[in-house]
Image (cartoon, rainbow, N blue to C red; front, side, top):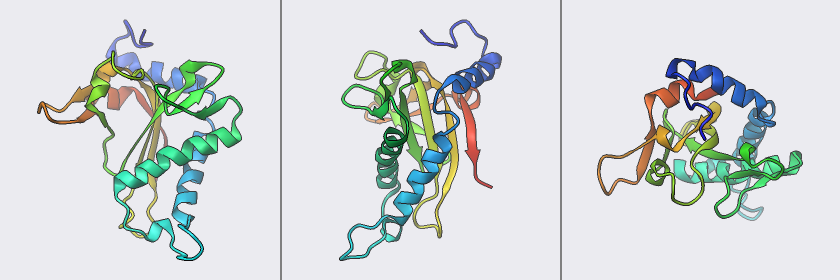
Amino acid sequence: MSPYEGIPVEKWQETTKQLVAKHPLSNVIVDFCQRSWASIMHGKINTYLNMYISDMNLSPQALGSLLHDVIPEYIQKNVKGFRKGEGKEKDVFCEYNEEFSFEIKTSSQKSIYGNRSYTKSDTGKSKSGYYLTINFEKLSKENPRILLIQMGWLDHTDWVGQKSETGQQASLTKEAKEYKLITLFKAD
């Protein structure tokens, strides 16, 4: 059941603040995201090529995929009881309370997008629960950085699929963007 059930939209933000405050990683997640970003930006492919990842022509999707893999590793190595999710589990899985497991969404655009399947509640892993969202600059920019880190609780009903039957993308409703994600970090 959604923690927003029966709560008027104008009071959702207070509920979100309470949900984020109770999450055991809310005070350290920005640090893990920033460390993950730095390790990617300073990472090398191999010593023979001596090629930095930040010097490659990676697409935003590839960079987001790297963040998607590196952040759970930082968490797993530093916080007991959390690990990278497997199969139908969330991206980061909490072993002692599954409610604290969460999905990671990244984007080089101002918005966050999901797969159209996020609009359906009965397929694959649960689409409702905690989310960590990260917006970043493209590698084409000099010294790219994370622009925004948000955390909150989203329900499958917060996602709107593309109108086209063949479209695979889903975006968040205006209300979800405004009231269900709390900004933990924003670049100057």
